[in-house]
Image (cartoon, rainbow, N blue to C red; front, top):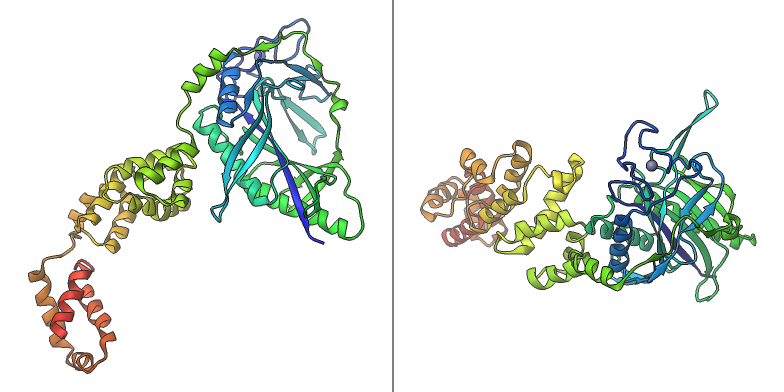
Length: 476
Ligand SMILES: [Zn+2]
């Protein structure tokens, strides 16, 4: 029996507003505990929430970027549960009437295949506080700075069928949030969090199997690992004649396995009801149109333009448009060189390797786009060879100097002048009479040997094409 996993993802993205969703407290990360709080976000009796308009605008931006239908009227609801990090005893969220529904995005897989994944809904809600526990002293702490920080919850359709698809979906979602400049999408700081619903079914079956929910997935690598683990676990259970139990699981990063957290709660456990303190939210078409006009070029459009305008392969365009900064870096480079594909190769090859090695992001790159473009231009103009260019690049990364400066300082200019190369070749031929004889006797493979000798003699600066040409002539 062949099984097919079915995956749906819920993402909580923290919005980059200056203040919280229902009060004027700062949303800044990393402040001392309980310094960004007020009676509203602490849930004191008698206070009233006031909706932050920026949150609504950001939600509309994301809804448009994910092709959602935006509701003319939506509502906030109270989601009731009791936990120390939730001072009101309920979270203000949206339930039956979310701000946006019925959207989709496109994801690209490693084999180049493009898939459309449905977005069920997007809604706005407030974040809870943060508890921390000290088992050695048997005490717990709670920090309410995060209470009331605005979140977008983005729920996908259960339409993904492999950990790779789930990973691609999450990366694309985060890329959109960053393009729109509404969330920093930082998983480590918890501003991009993901829960996954997973079930398996017989391949071709229409019905969904019993699902489990995986929580605490705080890196892309863990998401893919945890999903692969959970899929395997469920398949083995069913093969052994057992039933999958609906439950909430936590991913244990140290032991690489999922552990049961609690039986899964149903929506009715939360006793949702419309929040009487907040009016229904009415969004006029004019506002949606105005926000629509302000959207930047999004990854799909940018990718298409990179293919048509710069003649890049789809694969390159997909990678280079994953982030806005990376795309800008490429464009800056591509505009200054003859062949944009060469810029793409250098960015995806040498530059990416350099950034990975020093743990930096593209906007912290030790080699600027202008300098990389200059380096490529030196190569395109035949001033330096490709091999020398790589050495110059390492120097640029280390010293921060411009490529022409390094080339001049170290005397690395490629020698393409036949009158300068010829004497060297004559010397080499004169010094290796035995090899010359063998070559003339038919062992033409020895040409490589002579090229190597000339390159060694010239410190790698001789133009290889010229060396080959002259050698063949003189030896033949
Ligand atoms: Zn507050």
